[in-house]
Length: 299
Image 1 (cartoon, rainbow, N blue to C red):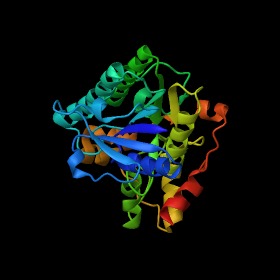
Image 2: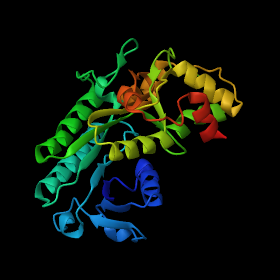
Image 3: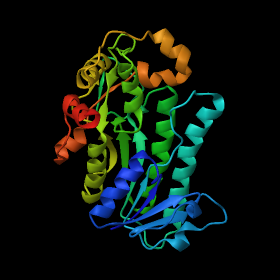
Image 4: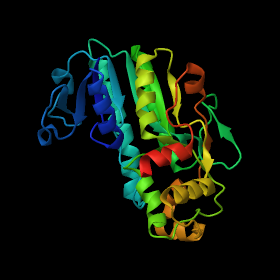
């Protein structure tokens, strides 16, 4: 397959590119700065989001487009940071829709990133793909607009998969931040510890993206989370056990709020999200339980 990836130089994008190449696909990475990268066998860097560059002229007919582009959520959420989080996602997705519109030969599928934050936060509800209503906090507003933009690809006959990522666990991303206090012997649950963590191992993120590429029945919202979400208190317990460190110092919510501001919603709140479509479609998880996932990543 010939596949274009926006956000291909990021955490998920790098892992995905490697797996696509290993299975024989050809990858075209859309980037603002193609001159900063050197083309490799089966990897070509294509300039985009620049009025002086026409990505369509540089691309062959594509089988798929995968959009992972967007400003990182990590960092203090000033007004300008929140604006970059929102605008980077919407702008990149609109650019992809415009590309699809102009392409003579349309790709068969667009896989567009989103997040379980679509639902807002809850201690009591369980969310599957059948739940249509979004939440009302900042992340819910961002993801709702992001998904709505991506689904415009349906207008051009392109199957569209909305990849709602949970907390992705890998050697990069959130996990190093989660484990740091434990390595310094000051680890513990956050706040009450009752908030849900809908996590997923990076291996299953890649597996589910490939699965949705290869299974035409997968479309619309597709939850990329492990089938066994856990509470923050359990996450703290398993991290401590895996690292052989103490789990004794709860972090008060007020401290997290003071340190992180509005971004604290990422760690002090959560939602219980299940991958119903993946289970029913026959996807086989490599890491269904947090103990095995953390043993793999922290060993």
